[in-house]
Amino acid sequence: MQTRIAVMIDGSYFNRVSNFYKFEHAAGRRLSLSGLLEFIRAATADMEDVPRSRARVVEAHYFRGRYTVRDLEERARTPDFVEESLRNDRVFDQILAASNITPHYTRIDTNSEPPKEQGIDVWLALEAFDLAISDRCDVVALVAGDGDFVPLVKKINAIGKRALVVAWGMKSENGAEVRFSSGLSGAAAYFLDMADLIDNPDGEDQTALVDQLFVDN
Image (cartoon, rainbow, N blue to C red; front, side, top):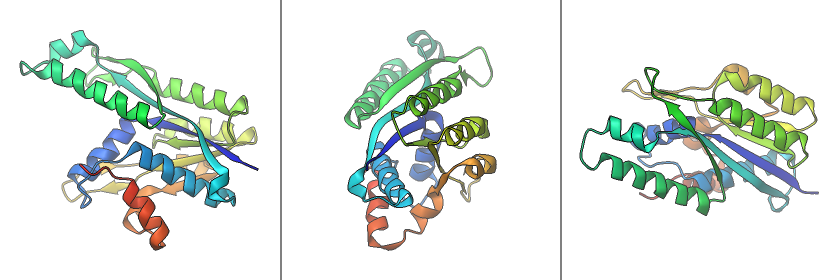
């Protein structure tokens, strides 16, 4: 029997974690999306007690707010700012496509201070629950740390699927911090404390998986 995994990524949270490893952690490298999917697949197989060959990521989705071109023009501080921003967005879209991850973007609300994403958490929750209730997966892996996702996690578990929370809790000497809600981790059927797993891999197999979690540049 195969275990089908759907991975739902809170893009803002993932970006904060990736920046932490690049600028605040001894790793000095950003996270790899494809490496993260493979780590989740292997860990899920182990937790579900199935051979890794029988665990498969059937869908992966990435959710984040984005600035419009006009918003970028209004925020530009250098002549090349807009062009560089749009190029970075295109490069990242190519990374998502290469990793078979479906992007979902909403406009960032620039009228608030600081600017905020509009409805992206609700969109993630709706897509995740739709995947679970339509029986397109067995495990929903949520890469997020916000306690607002607790009702989603509880609902997924209640309908007979398993909610896996993938999150980081860490703080640097400079005061930079990434956190997750204890309520979120406590509500999950499975929980991966990624900061601990990365810093303290158990054996050669997990060490290899951890190394794949980072990009080379």
